Image (tube, one colour):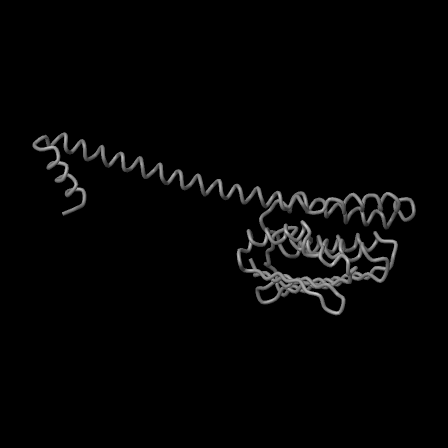
Length: 245
């Protein structure tokens, strides 16, 4: 005996000899169950959509927190360079333009190619090399074993900005920043080493940029990432390891 047949018998027992009314009551009951089920699913769907929208809005907010002062400071430096060295100023303006385009357009995407992120970092490093009126050594090495790696946009720049903010900008001379990115066998390994003012060491891990980075990693990579900081030989190290998307 089918479930529907059993329910009809139950309704017949409840309503006696009035078989038509029993059948009507049965289908009305089924209709109510159907409406209720649809309502439950619609509520679940609505809650999930709100949750996705909330996460999306949070991600956009976190991306918008990428330091805008760098752009303003760079423009001020370029203003002075235009008269002294117009050709160099033109090249740097193109790099700044590429960075702004990437930040505004590609930065809104959920994922970008690792090559695009590396180009953004290269432009950032090149602009920094022309920014300071003191001796600063900046080295950026990268190696990608194959195409196809994806990464959240404007993610690595947070660690790079942190190294400059609490390292180069606080030191009077002999500042250095060494950056290395290796994408191999499905993993992206990114590391930075910089010297620093001992009074600034706490700022490396307590600033809004690092909080921003940790939250974005939790949203985008769940638990499949490793982020660590340590000090060795008076050098501050930051390391990030990500899986291939």
